[in-house]
Length: 452
Image 1 (tube, rainbow, N blue to C red):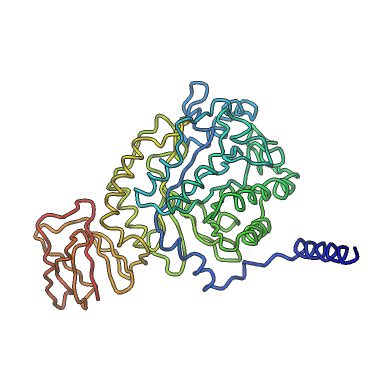
Image 2 (image 1 turned 30 degrees about the horizontal axis):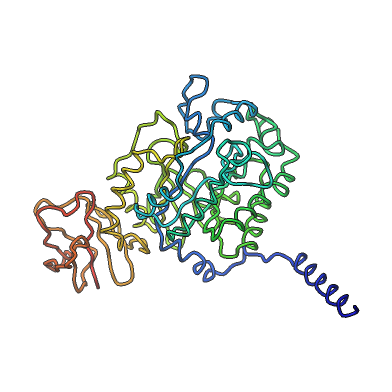
């Protein structure tokens, strides 16, 4: 009996010690530790962004009025009261959703990771959250844990699943809902005194559900950090909270308050976050030693809007991908599924073309580093190991391509040529001139491999 009591007492002490153990401060992580943690992300280069929620039900239209702004902000831009917006949940029944199909589309496009909106600004959750009933299981007729199905599909296909999560919340009474539908939070001196409780009792517990309950989550991608009630101290606390739950987790710079507008890069100073987040734009030049990821739409909106047909061409999207990786960044390309659960066909068609191009040219995408050279008039450069990749979009009419930046290479060939037939080269004081075929193997961009 005495031995049993001692064992029980010892167990209680161990549990108590574990519960009271102070958090590690991951803000002091060394550069080598950061590099090791982010190695898979640096290699991946290309990911799929998915904006999906009950805003796909109105699909950009409310009371016969079409919004001229992005679809997932319809609650805000159309000033829809919380109680009215909640009614869309009863119409969210995406019976055509197939997690395996979505993951297959991403994988065939050459994408290595998926970032999906676990919760957008409207507060609606795509998983079975135990913290709220404002989720897909409790508020909709669908009653399937979307994130669970995606997590399982991603694991089967070797795709890293990541979550976008909104800090602000138009639905929660201790966040921005207190001001709906006027949306004056932070203006005219208004603030919500309950916001710290929202962070501790709602935001953090939900983040714990996501990080610990859905497999090997790669990135937590925050947004909505600009609201005045959210402070840099809160951001640093959340960064450390999540890293203590999952030390290898990657977290974007919107966890803190350092992001500089749509340009997305972090201001100088003491701010948390592992990478910058340019939105709908690509930095003019590379940024050595700084990690960043451009997120962009295929049309004009993130969340589905049925009348937005302003689609970027396949050529533009592939050129954006090349431009980004040539400057050392990652490309996060968005799809906005319908309320039925389908990725729109124009998105699928464009992703197929991108995937076909990457099947041939993936060596010049995955794991490349920023070009040390100035961007040439005919395309772009990148480097990896002892190879330089020249992406030629402006094919020379006479078949001669001069590269003045490079003088010492051992051989060169077209990446599209499976036989690696060597190109004829002429060296001079003007660099190296390559004799190319009369017609480009790929009119969008043909890659020349230059090996030192």
